[in-house]
Amino acid sequence: MSTAIHSTPAQRGPVVEFDHHSPVYAQNNWRIYDELRKRTPVAWTDAHGGFWVLSRYDDIADVARDDIKFSSAENGITIPPTQQRSVPIDLDPPEAQAYRAVLQPFFSPKAVRHWTACVERWGTVCIDQVIERGRMDLIMDLANPLPALFTCEFIGLPIENWETYARCMHEGVYTGPDNPDFARTRQELEWTVKNLYELVAQERRNPREAMLGNLVRAQVNGKLLTDEEIVSICFLLMAGGFDTTTGLAGNVFNYLGETPAIRQYLIDQPDKIPNAVEEFLRYFTPQQALCRTAKQDVEIRGVRVRKGERVLLAWAAANHDPEAFEAPNEVRFDRFPNLHQAFGIGSHRCLGSHFARVEMCTMLHEVLTRLPDFTIAAGAARYPSIGIVNGWINMPATFTPGPRKLPNERLPAKA
Image 1 (tube, rainbow, N blue to C red):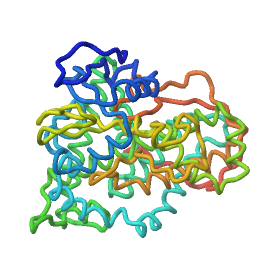
Image 2: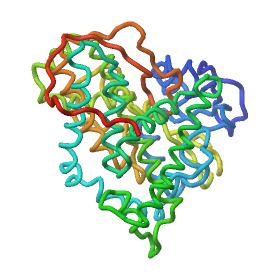
Image 3: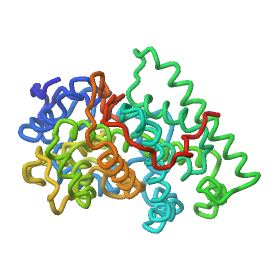
Image 4: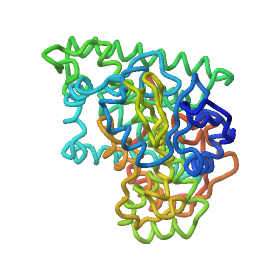
């Protein structure tokens, strides 16, 4: 991949070679966006049927906030588009806001406070499973299970199924058709959807007080949510809740493994962990980009974007824009204000942002207090494609063994 400009009709604007799902992008995303910002901040690529790439903070924010000229419902919010509509992220206001109003109470500051102890307990239990043996996989033993276990409890899913849910959500974001695990991953994702339908049917017969039980009783515009809408909401919450925080955690652990002085700084000053998490969100940007479709002809920086054309909102590019952040390619825990776009911006800003922060702070606290001398071992592997989530497949590590905190607690057994 390069950002070399091809000849093109004037009204089209500059054309570049760009594919955010490619291995080249995964290895060079910051450099690619730096070149785009300098030369072609509004660029057309023919990849995936063709779309515009925005790489300036202000342009991305303007489009994300403009629900009049740009749509999430037309073609969805991913490139390439998925086959099924996701509620509410693939809807436009005011319809999207009607569904978000149903979900908002579950993500309020009060709800976050209520669930924080649950997140912290799972963090302790995950570390307890490995701390006595002095070795672990930071992804598969902590960064993957903690968000999955919490999300299961939060939604009201069978906790004993957490490992199957987590595996397919984790592997599904980087396992392509050429991967030997593709068929199994697809089967597990299909099983998860089928299982969600079964769980919705159970809740309709005997609703509980968890989120799933509330969703079967919820109404939008005077009508009960359909089974399909509830399954779509739950699957979206799982997709967002299971692997984006996992992706951030992998990048953070790898960074701290390579920068012992910064690791020691956070060990010595744990009160700085929340600021560090905010900067890590900006720096690594777990979800690299989403998109919108133009509902009318518009101009961005003098470039004509036609009705029906898709526009990639590259959150990762915005978060490294030197016009928005001083020294954007440096980690600075004192950065303020840190108005990053890691959770998106506008009407579809991530509902679960506060939970993601709690999960990441919890994982950092557990690792830095209980495994302070961890060393990442050979064999750690990044996702070959980070167009969906910027993460790691696995990350083996060693450390000085220590004691359990909750000797009688174990991860839930598989169903």
